[in-house]
Image 1 (cartoon, rainbow, N blue to C red):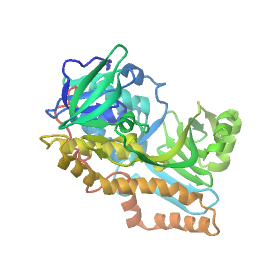
Image 2: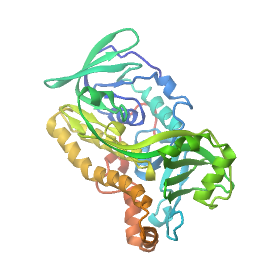
Image 3: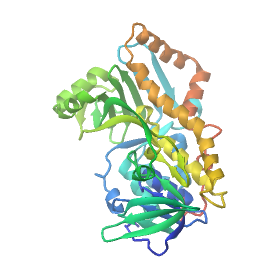
Image 4: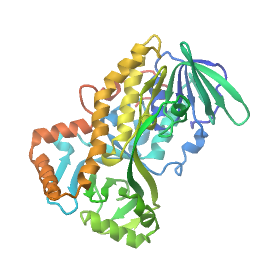
Length: 419
């Protein structure tokens, strides 16, 4: 059964109100489903539009831990046929001799991660949400005012015909990098504009990727190629902001020639490119993850550089940890509970954000000797098995702090079938 927009006006008092039914908000709503909580989900867009292939043509590289979380949430069975496994990762720099190679067999798994078109991922999450009986959904509805009133949040909504108010002990804002909730609460951000744009497209190389993913660092920015079905690759090509229109307007044949000149011929000649889109790149980080009885998640908390594809995996991990902590809470908005959430996620979050921020800038440096040093670093990582294994496991999301959902001890009462 498909998810349909509905008016959840049967009650106005909730334990948790989630703003944003995108990938992160929908996943958290599912993670909360087995708990005895009154939950509402607010989304500005009609939900049936979000399931359409054209809604978001991007792809997401899911870490090993993220796949486990989706299995625990009961959606992976609907996604597996659309997923392309990442079994090998090849990292290099243009003009350098050093290469690092990562293989799933080296850490004893079948795949390091999976690649999924976003529209399949959101459709599976929303379909599963449509089977949850105790979830109220307000869509399309916008949040127009937010106030904390003692032990509850007052959330004023606006739909196409009227305004109305609901109350919640905890408000979770997963409403994007330009979060309206964050703005309404007066929470600022730190922002680093990279002066770059990501060119997104699907390309068809002459040689099928066969489970291989590539990260190629160039002076202008990284090029990522991720395996897709039908011998295609998902391309994320980082260019300077000044080159964005150039990259979008090049004829297809010339675009592929320029790509090949930077990437090389590890996959043969590029034969075809699909529709191209551009997204400006910036590091945007909320000054606070928690503001009173409000938690920020996903891009509302941190929008990071797409290098290594870590953004959604970090957000999904944090959503799973929040659900785990709330399972033990009497009051989901209690200050001690939310401070415990912050403390648990802080170290890993800082590591991932720092890594994604520093890596592209490191490979963009053109000082004498830097290129040689970077090549030695890639080569050294490839030749030191213990260091290499630790690095791979960390990026797979497998560490002592991973959430219960990633360990396979997930919800047992989500409606709608098994994983």
